[in-house]
Amino acid sequence: MKLKSIILLSSTLFVTSVPIIAAEKNTDLQSLKQQLLTELLQSPQLKKIIRDEIVAQEKQKALTRIQKRLEKKKRQQQHLHKHLQPVNPKQDHIYGNPNAPISVIEYSDFECPYCRKIHPTLKRLVDDSKGTINWVFRHMPADFHQPNARQEAEAAECAANLAGNDGFWRFAEKLFQHPRRNKQSHQYLIRQAAKRSNIDADALMKCLEQRRFKEKVEKNIEETKLLKLVGTPANILIHHPSGRLMLRQGAASLLRLRLDIAQLSAPNKKPGL
Image 1 (cartoon, rainbow, N blue to C red):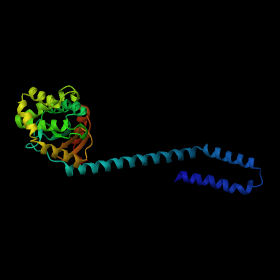
Image 2 (image 1 turned 45 degrees about the vertical axis):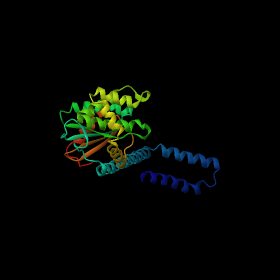
Image 3 (image 1 turned 45 degrees about the horizontal axis):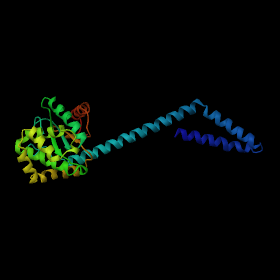
Image 4 (image 1 turned 60 degrees about the horizontal axis):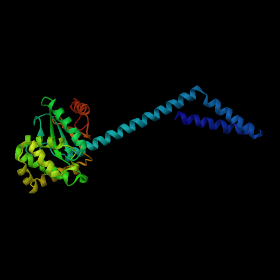
């Protein structure tokens, strides 16, 4: 408002000056205008008013941006709460203490290099947590990684059926650890991962051929669509005592995940914020 007042004042000066200088030459008029403008712009008071106005506008823009981010985050939290399936030890593959107060649900793709990168990071996160964090693995095979990614997801479910929860995690780790597999038959890689996990490879391949866990993998995929997750790995962190949760997309570092968990576990925060 102050800046507008100054502009109005300067306009008024020019308008009221017209009768006085009407008879002067055009060059004199231009010279007078320039002199008035120069003096006006050199005024310390005007400079302060302009600076204050700019600062106020930038502060308002920053507040608006923060408000929009918070509103977007709140909408995301509400959406995740609505569509996220609760952790279920009878259905989920859980690494670590099943009763841990914090869970990291990873939606993963065995053909994804970023999923391969974060796998040991999440293992370290849980191993160092002294039972306070567990890791839940759910499938999100990308369309452009088919048919390998989906078949590997079903193979991992077969491994769990044959060797239990521990067998699933051994198989998943060996599958991720294998050298880049786009140059080899994925069935050969599945067999190798089974053998290195001490799982009957023939029984696993038979289970895979029968598509025994096709529906379970498809249910995981349907959940990712409802959650509107994009890209793997997609990690949802949950603080069970408060119900707070957070989405961390991509192959986050160990430090980043620890900071996220510290923020999620902080007291005096409303659920979902």
